[in-house]
Image (cartoon, rainbow, N blue to C red):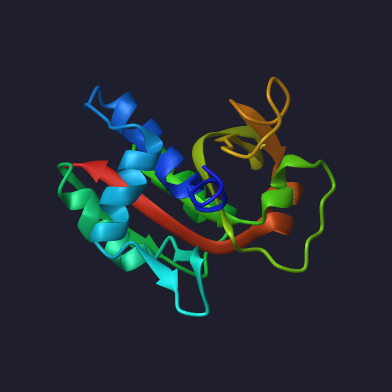
Amino acid sequence: YVFWAPKLCGMACFSMVLQSLSSPTAKLVDLGKKALEAGVYKKDPKNPKRLIGMLHAPFLKFAQGFGLGGKLVWFIGANAVAEEILNKNFVIATVSNQIRHKGAKPKDKTGHLVLVHGFKMEKGKIAGFYIHNPSGFYNESQENHFVSVEDFINCFSGRIIVLWKK
């Protein structure tokens, strides 16, 4: 668990996608081990007890083995994220793990992945996003957590993985 816990956010998001499609899914650590074998993660040469990843391009290839298509989209804003959701695609966003805190303004906007599954409009503008956050606080910021568009942008790297059922 200590080995896998820091890097399973991507597999947790992927597992949620598979579950929503009623696809059989392995336990997270088993899914992580399969992903490691597929090159989605790399062992850190400086510290073999640490993983580097989740590497997005190898992940897309890995997801194809589960009957999913996908694409990587970089340098985007809130409207592009909402458009992918409107197209009924699954959106995994690269963010700071500080997204679980209201008003967060992290310097590093990478290192964590969340599943973005909805958004809210107010007065013709995106007011925020609904996310499932593997590192969120239980009953507070983990499941169906609403993040204002300002907080989302403050924590968002501008990179998403988009998945769809083939």
